[in-house]
Length: 312
Image (cartoon, rainbow, N blue to C red):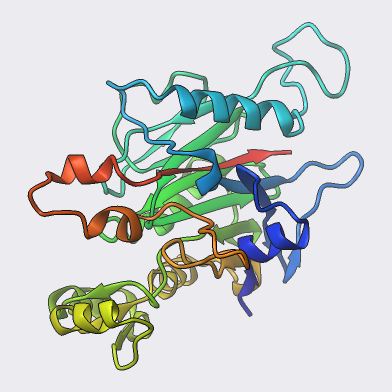
């Protein structure tokens, strides 16, 4: 049975609507993996709308991104020392280091052994077994997928855009090939992304997903929350579930259902009880801007989130 979690509910439960990021547990055997004394586990997380845009390009500077990532890595627990520092304590003063990649909507995954291994590289996934490295990808409606092997302590973060759907399966194969991971020990998390409540597609894309990722990920759009959605469905008459598509990939890759957790939040429409949006979203913030704007100009109007995974 697939596990589910809600970022919005977790934030509201802890009265944390103004938080800039959240971290959440992986699940194994249907139960959340939480660190115990003498034991370390990974957590996955992402920034929220309140953090501002985490847009990343190698040829650009984003001081807000740098500031927020430093804040996050300073606040989360430090990993066990790898022996590369002078500290003799169990928890050393080594600093966690973000490892980014510039996204291109592909299934390309890089291994990072050291800081800087992904510099100037373009792709959509990062795996590592170095506890000081924090793989970071960016998302704004696309699917963040995270993997964690609780035995080898290998981790991975992946950006699964519609063109790159299937990268989660490639990530599983990377963990098995590089670190000897056993699929029954791998835990997976599907983070917040645009839900089928807000994602309308044409027949061509619907057919592509049904043929490659199963019929459960597509349904005919027959009811609508807004007049805008009803008008949109005249051109894009199908709803697409990227959740179901990625579950199809993970299960076919051999990940047990009880080791998978899915965030049921929609980046486009999920709101706090106050009416404030929780996440940035391409569809909500940029898709309906004037067509006279270039795709690059529209993309700068959305709040991109950073999605990351680390050993705590």
